[in-house]
Amino acid sequence: MNMIHEKLLVGVLAGLIVASAGAFAVQPAKAAGYSVETPAHVSGVKWWDVLNVRKWPASYSQKVGAFDPHESVWVERCIIAPQGGSDWCLVENGNARGWVNASYLTLADDDWDI
Image 1 (tube, rainbow, N blue to C red):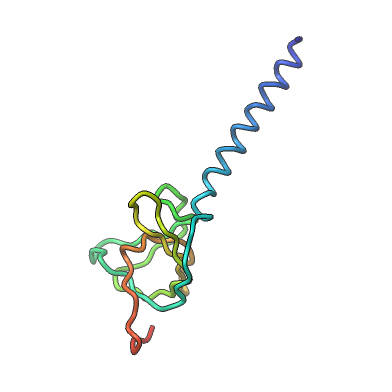
Image 2: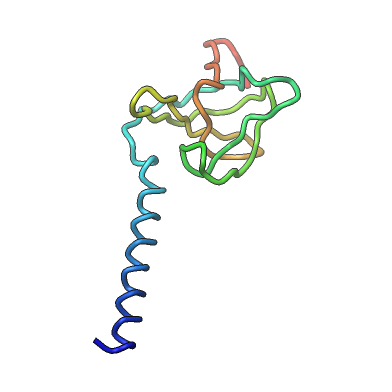
């Protein structure tokens, strides 16, 4: 095997590793989920802090926004966390759309308006 073939093989293997890592990072969004379709508000966040909104349902995912404490949001759907972790919900309001940890949401009562 000459030097060109070795470089080609290393490049192909590196590409496969990167593609596999990318597929793993997207995997949480494919977890089993349930539809919610109801208003909620941010709870359990200190007055001086914010709830981070993530691109994917994982704490290591890219931050795409933030909600203030008690801010109103629309909950589209949630996913069930594996192995005792927290569920994640896809939420939105006029400021941001993305995934948040479900433990920081309180669903609205029937007579509660956003």
